[in-house]
Length: 436
Image 1 (tube, helix red, strand yellow):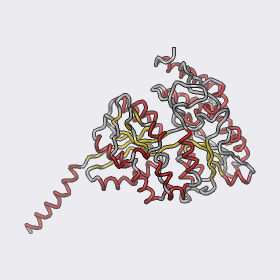
Image 2 (cartoon, helix red, strand yellow; image 1 turned 30 degrees about the vertical axis):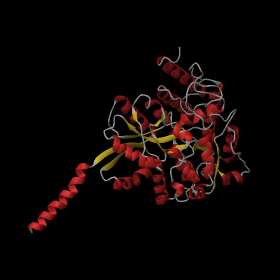
Image 3 (tube, one colour; image 1 turned 60 degrees about the vertical axis):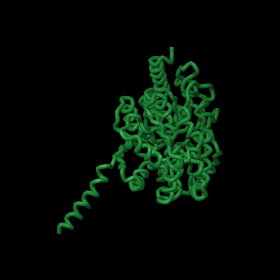
Image 4 (cartoon, one colour; image 1 turned 90 degrees about the horizontal axis):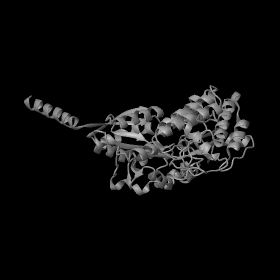
């Protein structure tokens, strides 16, 4: 009996010892499907790193941005890993708010796509690691277009898209002509509208930092955007962001959709998409120019200097953004489900090419063609395509997104919305000392 009790005590002690050494890291992320999959696969990381446990805080995109921006500016240590993009990385790394990632040698940093890596690098060091990268492109129902005798070129014009939306709009059959982001936010409706304004020859601000939101290119872009969604879009478009539109398109409710390239894999998956095999892929529409017509973004994982467990956080970031993680997703879910837009090796993999042949080339072309350092037809003083990499942009972009939503819902006219946007932008720029 004594020997049995001693054995039981040792067994309980063995269980208790590792538990006392476990470090919990808190990861703040967005509620996109690839991030949800990362949460599902996290036990693989925890089994390989039994001294680390991961706790998730998952938020809608706008809420995530507000939460992590507020926390890091206040020096909060609530999170060990942040999900951020190029905009935040380019502003926060020079301020010393992020720790360099410094991934291990087997991370294969040279495998990262140059445009994606450059947007996350400061003074030669990586300050956020890309989980997935994206540009924007046009998705269209190839079967509906063929039936209607519509042939869309590799990069159509916005006028061609508008005309196709009119011809394909069939709400009686449950199909809306076009689906576009309408939810207000600088990373929601404004991300799309800013690329539209770029395509019409516009810019966020001129070389004297004077906002250009009441200019003709912006009026042309926003007027077309409002007209298309009011006439050929789904009801309640002002509530639709990326996730809502992905659901609508793969349910067969949208004929056309301009949005993130990352959606291509989900639309092509017959297990989740009713339109798999019937989707066409084209470059984001142009107008007077193709410059700045498609955005560049990456949802990335970063380690704030305020976090309590930087070494454990770095280890998780390196795992979740590694080539090995992509291969793990491929084993678990198939190559069509892997996060794309980050690594050359993904596009070179024959298995990925086999399942992603319909969209891989278009996705890669969109990412490679986006140039945040030369984003607009007239010369601009800022870096970024669908954002301007200045601290003031977040507040201005939120206000402008709300004004555009007001025009979409009829609470104001396009002219009133852009005049209010211009006034708000000028106030912020003057307060920042950028505009005299």
